[in-house]
Image (tube, rainbow, N blue to C red; front, side, top):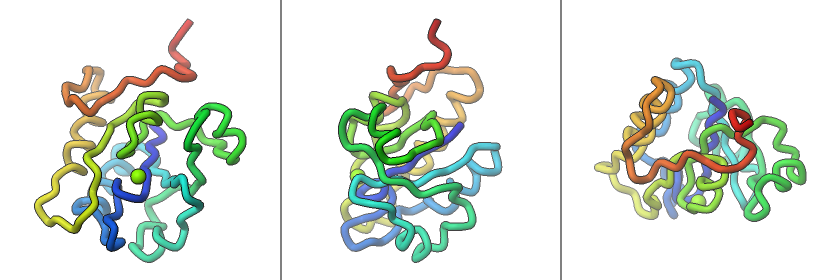
Length: 146
Ligand SMILES: [Mg+2]
């Protein structure tokens, strides 16, 4: 899958610290055959990706549509189809499918959200329906629909 992560309050706290497990889970996802992308509603966050030394495991950095998501992919030149989206804003997750994460505002070494995201991806790709209440199957552009 093409897995898209939001930046602010998804992988970064207000102090720009990285959510615990981010690097580890990105590596596991890539190792499992997925591609990891970063996008943000406030711009192309290449600087943050570099600062946290994630550029070697991230396949692309994009501007994220904040409304009219399908059209926004075209508007912002997102040429890769988001299959699974992780965001603290529910609307875009509901559209494409993915995981509505708890907002990560403040540095917290005990935060385990990244592991829960990974477990949800594993359940989905092994043919099950993820049981986590934060999972959304997605409604837009479903290529499996007739
Ligand atoms: Mg956010």
